[in-house]
Length: 411
Ligand SMILES: N=CN[C@@H](CCC(=O)O)C(=O)O
Ligand SMILES: [Zn+2]
Image (tube, rainbow, N blue to C red):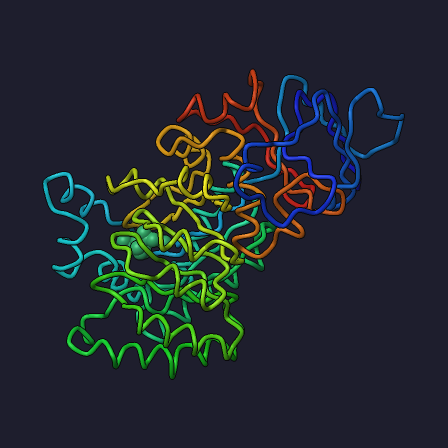
């Protein structure tokens, strides 16, 4: 089946040759073609160009995109969308003066979500998660990384990962799974963190590895959660099963997690609301991409990741949602783009690069996703009629996405 999109006001993120990721100053450049066409064969982008060069061809479908923009779908490289219920009461508690830390210290937070998830059947968990996934696809997400981490027992973690596997089977979007066994210290291990770390290393990682339920390994490397030593032990154990690190670091404190991630060839280091010069130095010359999660900063009222410092140091940056019930109950990548421009002073070009090709890199799929390139998957979105791409982050809070095509099919 062939689909031709014609009269595109502007086709964004057109990359002739395969770029794995965009770094530093180059992030300010967003290659586009005005008054363009795009040709899709089955699930693949096969041709594009200016309308004046379009030769008469027969296609099964034609979409007229007059006044509209076309761009690759968002690649959301950091989410926790498999969760049970919500934490709206903690949201109100924070408004009334408690901090995220206070809530965690009294047994809420991640432990609250873990209890809910343990008491939710696998089918129900699947249905709740599938609903979220459907919603974010409508908002333009065409590839997504999903973490475990609300299980906190071997069985509940496996349940989460099986739900992710089922989502992979049932949905056309590209999904990558991450084992986040060390997300918080369960109540039963409150005074024996070492035993929990051993459980992750000796039981959880081997089982997940053998069942091939995850592509990546994550750790919440943070004061009060898992320290550098715990993190290193877990990354080492995971490497025996080829689980590549994508880790939570520097959300509240900077104490060397970035350097550790780089040492273990992490694909990404995520959060980075607190970032020092040593962290920047560690990232230089590495293959590890920093990932910022501005919706989390917005929701928790914590600092925004210093995007200017990162990009101006010549580094790449990816943007993701962090969709989860505690720190970011939103999977809207359009809001992420706007917030990155408004609060982190990223230009629209930088934000779009960070949410497409660099997001794809941060989930190991930039060879097939994240840009309009011949041979890549036809995961694209068509906006409503808008004056220019600057309008997407500018008119924040509105939904500018008209149609989403995944593998060439309208969703
Ligand atoms: N910080 C660690 N994990 C999640 C939040 C977990 C939660 O509060 O449920 C995050 O990335 O923000
Ligand atoms: Zn997260």
